[in-house]
Image 1: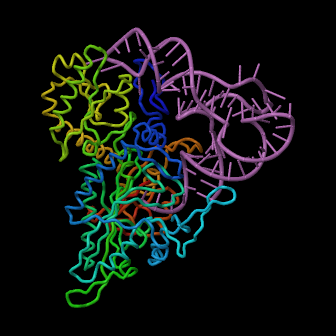
Image 2: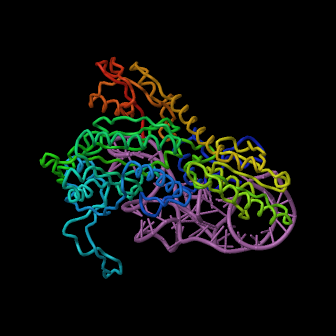
Length: 523
RNA sequence: CGGGGCGUAGCUCAGCUUGGCUAGAGCGCUUGGUUCGGGACCAAGAGGUCGCAGGUUCAAAUCCUGUCGCCCCGACCA
């Protein structure tokens, strides 16, 4: 019957198509998202407010993200290091804008000991002389460290990355998309010149773009943030923006050119080739577990998650059909042998990951668990298949009932190619979706209509999926930007880097504008 | 932090308006059996301090107050 929680529609037998996830995306997107996170066993809310437990399947996806990105960071010259979770309060105060941006959402440690009180409960004692904050990001502590590491131009560039958890005390949280604690990677670099630092900022943005496209199968648009959306303390913030299936934008990664702001705050100085003492130029860039949310909303369907093969913890799951006790052992052996064969093959620099799921639970139920988790390929192997030396294959990028008999040898041979086909299918699908909901808009009324739901706003009804990316000329006046946000809920996601100049009147004010920007509602 | 909704079994919920037997259902779980190319069926069983703390009452899941948490909408943010 129904999958755990939320359940399918009616428990109809052989009736109309029912989806594994309820509600569907169309019915209630936000609720659908939550149900997928649960049904795919990616994560669950914890007892700690705003914090999640990332479950094995979700964490394995994150590990794959980490591994792939880490390799790219190493190839671009970075070394990993680790800096403290706690940052002295005074460090945060060093950069004015930075403080303003983060002060409101910091967890603060003020005591270092617990003592049992008369009530038998533990009470904090041992007040710290200087409170520590739990890092919301590490610019300040890493800056202080860089100041010690950098003396000469020969020490530059300094290219460091850290894999860590950070805490931002968010008011409203959603699993993966915004949690109080999240996992991420933060790169921090110091350079001898502004040009070099800017080039590096853009280089890492390219790394993110490549990763999103080639691994996550998620098309992104590279761009520059407007001052309103800029990282606190940055001179320039670049980003990759992607469209989710509710047509809202997800900022999937950011790369900041920090100028000399943090170098001055932390006194990162070096003697240049002329013997002059100079402040270094720094950058920082990061992506987080939010990417998992991006995967869900880029590819997921009404049957659950769809994991791009390159990030899938398991590429192929083999589901033995073990109805006849006398054949059980034989089938299992056959399946295990097949798994062993497959594991000798490689896909995308990784051995093909195969799992034989011989758990003694209902066949249909088991199949649907894997569908909901989004494993790319399912193979059913029963007596008939064994007899014909073939497997019954289903692909997650196709319908659940669309299965196909494939000869064993052929499947082994073609497995990697099929995975690649699924991978590129997902990218093509997501790209088509984005393009379909991206509109060039030059007319103010059309712009307003684009971001206004058709249905009458019903207080308690789920929001209607509408809008998308509006490519419009914009005068870049911050007041106008704020006004649009206020009135329509849409913001400038970025000023695309790759977009050529296209002068004309601003879609809102009619004032001259140089380029088109992306307006969208966002996460 | 403002507005709305909700906390009863692992999950989804009924019961609450009009306080009163041992607090229910479906799914899931355990055991046994029947099935078997598919989210099966039958039977037996385990599982709940009704979010928490006070209060009213002979009596509270039910009424009152407070509090915590979750969800949705907004403001803010990766």
